[in-house]
Amino acid sequence: MPSLQIIDQEDNNTEAIPASQQPLCYICQEKASNYICPRCNLRYCSLACYKDQKHVSCTETFYKDNVMAEMRSMDSDDLNKTSMQKILNKFEAENDQLNADEEQQSLVKNESDNTLKTLEQRFEDMDIAKTDASMIWDLLSPQERHDFQALTKMDAWQGLDLPEYEPWWTVPISVVTDLDSDEGDDTGVSDIPPLPTAIPVLSAILKSPPAPHLIFHLLHVLMTYAYLARQTMGDLADDIEYGVQSTYCLSHAVLFSTATNSNNPFQSIGDVLTDIRRQINDLEHQNNAISSALDIMLLQDAEYLLRHGKDYAIRALGEIYQLLDHASKDKTLVLPSSSSPLSSSSSSSTSAPASAVTRKKVGLAARKAYFFMAYANHLKHSQEEDQRQHVELLVMAIQTEYRRLQHDQDIFDAHRKVAKDALTEHKQSLQNNAGSSNKITELL
Image 1: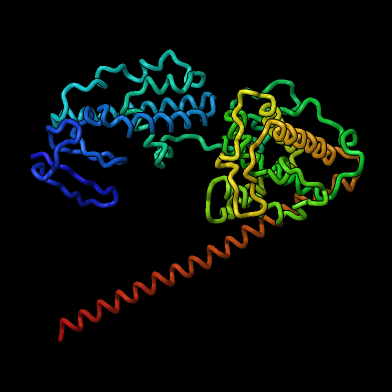
Image 2: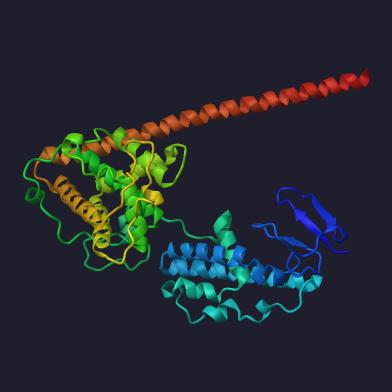
């Protein structure tokens, strides 16, 4: 007799519900409901009913929106095309298995998916990297769309051997390319931003010597860039609106600030780190502080960018400048308004204000990024030894800070392990005592 099976993946026991106790399918109202939709708990009997128009609001729109967002975040190199093909092949295999199961149980007749061409036939003449995401989506069957969305919500990506993102500034230079060469990198290993062609001379835009605190503002901008680059898989231009919104949220105290030098908020690395933590929490809508691991990673990223001999800091600043400059001139771009979640007010006095981000503000932020390019170039190539030492001292201070954070985290982890072991031992002791008491009671 057919039965509804509820399976717990972490438990080998399976609870079977007889068909006589199962309610009818909510769609066809004819057969027993053998399945339950994980999103809306709708009971259905077959794949045909699952795809019914009555259920489309729970499936089609949700899956489409999420898969579009996922595809926009993917790089367009050959490696990702291979990864995408692996994903699609996996969908095909799982879809075939589902159809085979339904035929065996006689739950449905001939499903429309059985007449679809294979994935290889559907995509054999298509360059996935250059094809619009909506076109790829339309070629997927409903089950394939469901499976794709399921993969984005679970850790199943790890089973596909997808490459982890490695920031361009952490890749050994000998593996990537010769930066002094006029030829671009065609290895596909990393996309190192080009060195800006027209780097301004600092003395041309700043008549007096740079203030000492500017070095911490530079650190703040570089940590902002490192966070954005990691969030966008190294492609800031892929979603310009998101890039501008995030830069506004993270760097409103520097690039988007209207404060004078007398109102400088950063006097140390600790000040910079505290502000970065707060802004990332606001950006990601987290109530708790970010982990020390992220603090350490962003500090190390800034260190790499500052001390690399190929002007990595200037290249990074050039990317932020290009992002903001393009956004300030693109009249079709929708900039975040006061109602944007990324620009909402916060209880913190240093959080991004709830005001609209105008093109004028973005243009001024671009000019500040342009200034920091000149400042970084001045520190790197200045004939004045004390100016060059500013970078060396900052790098040493960064190293000291992230080593301190790592040491504190190691101590915390060690104490937590001791406490956890003690708690486990205490519970075991209580269980042993309870067992001894039961044995004594039985003897009596």
